[in-house]
Length: 146
Image (tube, rainbow, N blue to C red; front, side):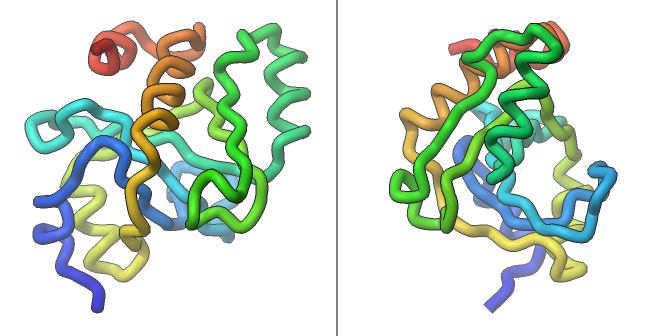
């Protein structure tokens, strides 16, 4: 059963994983897993999400070509998270910002689905990767510091 968006957002926490077609991506045909990385999304206006991709080599080449820190790519084996069917990478050089209302609209249109939470150690690595990235704005990094 799909919960209404306002109900689902009432339970939003750092580490929650949502599956949806991100309207901010060039290719919106495929759904991607997105992880909420905020420490306290209930009390923050902006929800920060990082998406997962199975195109590991493509992301590694992009990071190398752009001379970005290797720790901005967080590789996860498919056995480390039950929802993953393939080895995956979280590219911490890219984030998506949504308001809670944006997420409510996606949920109510049946376009967003809650999956589960990532392990806390993985969430910490993703936050550290965002902080290490020169592509991420300073105010985002401040939001993610412990």
